[in-house]
Amino acid sequence: MKNFAITILLAVGLSASAQVNQNVTKESTTTTVTVNDGTGTPKKLVKTKNTEATSELELKDANSKKLNKEAYETAPQVTSSTSVVRDEGFNARIGQISNYQMGGKDYVFVTDKGGYRITTPDNVEYGKLRRTSNGQYIYRTKTGTSVGHFDAAGNFTVETYDDKADGVTVETYTKVIK
Image (cartoon, rainbow, N blue to C red; front, side, top):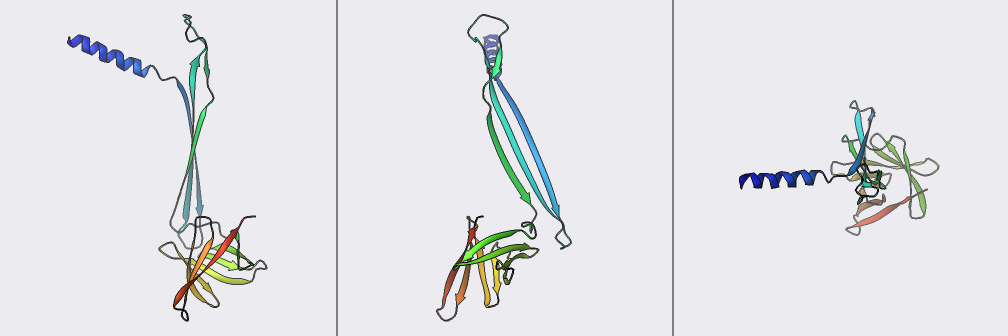
């Protein structure tokens, strides 16, 4: 009886492992960028892209009694994932620009080593953004200081305390995609 149970377990194990008829191709590409922004500590950005293509192997005339059968691959199923890991303080490229509109006027956000500079399209300085430890930004213009944040769509929302109304006013710079 003991030999019979061992034989059945062995047969089930071999048949389960023999049923895998797949061709799997995996590719991983890693790109590392190091930027020295003048703060003394270089910042790193590591981008890893993983691609996996899986195709089934099928036999031509699978039901025939022929010993040597032709095999062919089905169309591959491709999955791809990308992950980005960056050092604290690594923002965008210095000098990179994004276009925004607020109140019918155009503005340009230019990255610099401390955050962003806000200028008009003809390069007149309007204000500055500096990132805080909680992910928001200090918004500084000639008329005052406020707090702001970027939303998921890339728009920048500014919240300013108004002494006269004893409340908060909200303004939004809408990102312009060109």
